[in-house]
Image (tube, rainbow, N blue to C red; front, side, top):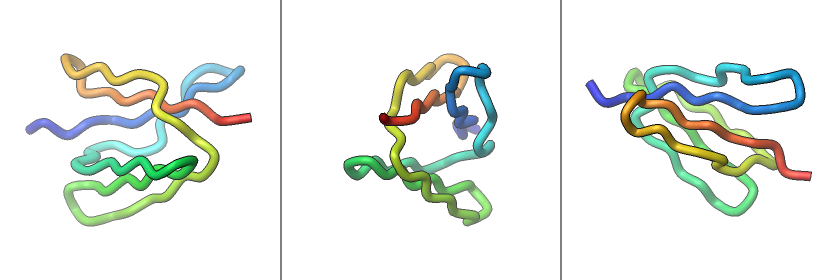
Length: 64
């Protein structure tokens, strides 16, 4: 499978936000995550920081 884990980077390190993410949509300051089982999560005031396609990881960062 090609699902990814999504992490939020902060001063205290990285925190896992969601695993088995099959869909990610970035709209301005908001990101929507959807798992393969249909579970959804919306995060506000975040942006994509880095994507590691090899290890299936997405890193987000908080916006000021």
